[in-house]
Length: 166
Ligand SMILES: [Fe+2]
Ligand SMILES: [Fe+2]
Image (tube, rainbow, N blue to C red; front, side, top):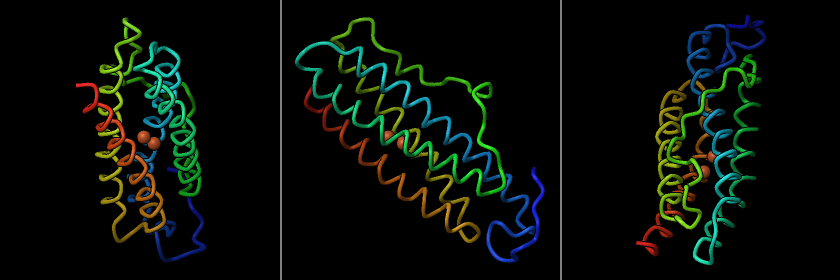
């Protein structure tokens, strides 16, 4: 845990919050990796999909890449603000087994399921962060609430696609 100078006695940057900051940094690092892996998965699946039925889904994924990258940037920035260091690539472990581009490039439904799973995972993790921030780190909480809203929007969008395909 990086040491902090006591320029402030209130809020998450206060020395008294060292332990809480360490807890939040761990949660924020995980969030950062989730966003980065999502960027990779959406780039690959958007490019992999074939067919008229898949076109709109591929375009939606492409459009989300920029948004997810923006989330990753926000998490990295907040990690730095909390006296942490954004993690290097060697610390990365891939987890999104459901977002491997399908063998059948027209299998849009399996991609939609993978996206829903990733968005739901993000929503669960971000709810955890928001709760962990309560009462001690309003700024992180505020940032993650904004991001949560984006992910809920993504989840609903792909739930609607799913209805159409099933
Ligand atoms: Fe995101
Ligand atoms: Fe998302």
